[in-house]
Amino acid sequence: MSARSYTAICTLYNDSAGLLAGKPAGFPESVRSSSIRIVLALRKEDDPMTEWSTRVPNSSGSRPADDLTVGIVGLGAIGAGVAASLARRGRIPVVFDSRPDAVITTPGVAEPVSSAADLASKCDVVLVAVFDEAQVREVLLAPDGVLAGARPGLIVVILSTIAVSAVRESADLCARSGVHLLDCGVTPGDQAAHNAVVALVGGPDDIVSRAMPVLADFTRAVVHCGPVGSGMTLKIARNLVTYCTWVAVDEAATLAAGAGVEADTFLAAMHETEAKHPQPLKMLEVRNAIDKGTVEMSTERADNAVSVAAKDLDAAIRLGAAHGLSLPLTDAVKTMIRQVFVSDRTAADGG
Image 1 (cartoon, one colour):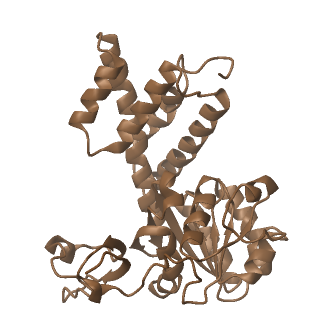
Image 2: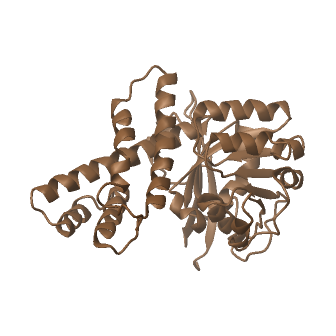
Image 3: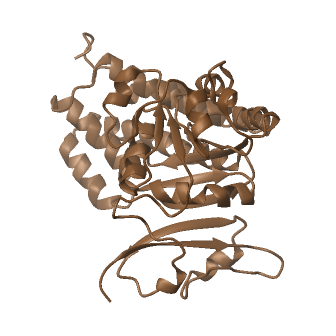
């Protein structure tokens, strides 16, 4: 059979009878006992399991068969990347960003609209990819925000990493206007423009199913984690692994250097011994590049990286507090994360 791409959307259920629906032959037996309901959007090449294909990615660039119109509010790294991935599948998004230059530099999108309200009035699904919960709230509630222009039945998908309590508050606000909300953490963010992120989704089954054609068009996999808030819970937990690892790698590199091991030797050793863990390696590569002057880490860039990490770590701390949990490592990492990007590795003049 000639190689071709397809999407197999497989829904796995776990109930008292051990029902497994949409399971391709050879699916890991361990999945049967999973307590998480998972929806996988799997894209493969030259796979004989074509009978499991329920949706074919639109590599031709023509409009998808469904009639869902999607909009994106916020064209930063995630929003612009998702826009590019959607356009690649032939789903040209309606876009809005308060920064006009962000729209100009985002290829493959429709002409920008005048406001988030205008965007919502034209769309069936709105993806919100802004910085933090304050901006999410503004996007939803401003006089020219999403809820001002939303039609009943609109689906809002929050891509921003925000506190779980803010997700639930946003869902309540949307519900009062007849609007549905899904939380959708995406990872790794640097793959947003390549149809290669994993979406961690929280929300009702029927709403996730309605939004699935859009979700499948910009991801490589979709994990339905449970009700509203559960997707963000998993994204926050995943981020916590990343940030704690960054601090650990930074400290380990400092220890090795202090003991006389060259940075390149340490990096090579990490590559050989931790080849299946790219996040620590990525952090180490950036650090070494900064040390060598081949990558410029200005004070502004460092501050931005730290602010993103601090926001995400704070979400983890708040989630722990909401459940009466102490997270001492997270508390420590929040106070230490800045040293990964700043200290004597970042020139005082911002160079």
